[in-house]
Length: 176
Length: 176
DNA sequence: CCGTTCGTTCAAATCAAAATGAACAAACGC
DNA sequence: GCGTTTGTTCATTTTGATTTGAACGAACGG
Image (cartoon, rainbow over all chains, first blue to last red; front, side, top):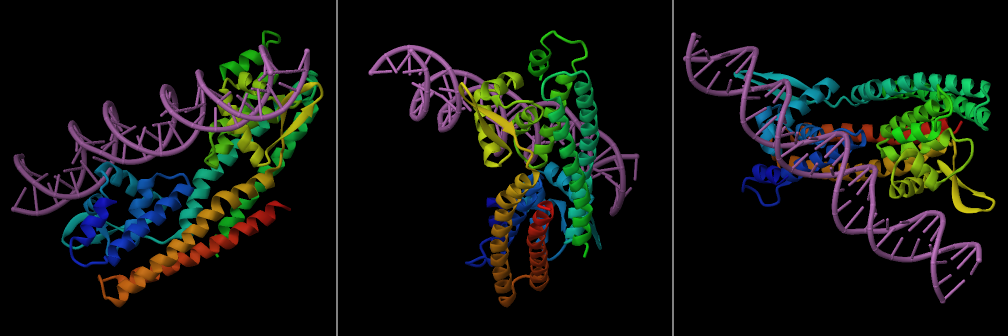
């Protein structure tokens, strides 16, 4: 962050409102993305773009945030795939310029559909298998609480279904 | 996991239905808790208790999962605080015995209220500060896009509010 | 074409979160 | 009380994820 402050204020004004705002935005989005278990660099990049008046080329991002070219490249790739940044063409400059896209419902939807749903579905399958095994165990009269375990698994399945119903509702609600 | 299989099947039956079920449950809950960014050990412990007919003492958990006493102790403490396990007294055995509590809505609610809400509220405050700075920047005519940034921050605030409204709705829905 | 700029990839280094285990404290039985 | 069992704490170690940076390839401009 030293880098950020430094290069932005560059010995001009005293209170450096712009630099503070940049730093805050970076901070804000870093903790935001961490809620979703995404790497910090993602938040830094988005935070910077969010308060930038114009689209920035990658090397500006690298130098302003003091991160490596590799991180920036990978981070921007992910952000693009999330629909959170878009590239803008700037006349007479062949570098890609990136702009933050405040597309919250798209981003959250993407997150749900790509990170949560697959897990839920995989979970479904495994629960089904567990149920099968538990039934077998009960038939074979293995162990004392086979019936109790069976009941538990079935209860869990109900919750799983509930969760799977909830997600689309949330997505719909976010979309309006 | 070698430990789990080993101690459970203990050279009795061939196909080891019970051992498979245990392993699967552990697996299932490990990936479940990881969605919420909780440590793996939490999932292991809960997964084991979930398919155990009777409450287990800590040393059983330690030996069946092959984890350390420290992990088990800390993990159980967290699970208790989540209301996900409860201790049962077993006559003539002074060790604490733990039982899985299939209390999904309580657990998820706890997660929302303790992990998400505080972050959202902290975010609120920071957004407010950012807005203040952006207004100042605009007044001082710093930078070209001060007005655009202001608009963005306000839009973000709207989304933040939306999110904060959504959470209680989700919680209510989960509770019935 | 050839040199330069831009961007990606991936093995290695770094870093933070979690697990370990030894030391400690508390509760019990004798 | 005194030794033993049970459970917690916390400094150290381990592990896994992220970041780095050097090497590479592609696209452009002259």
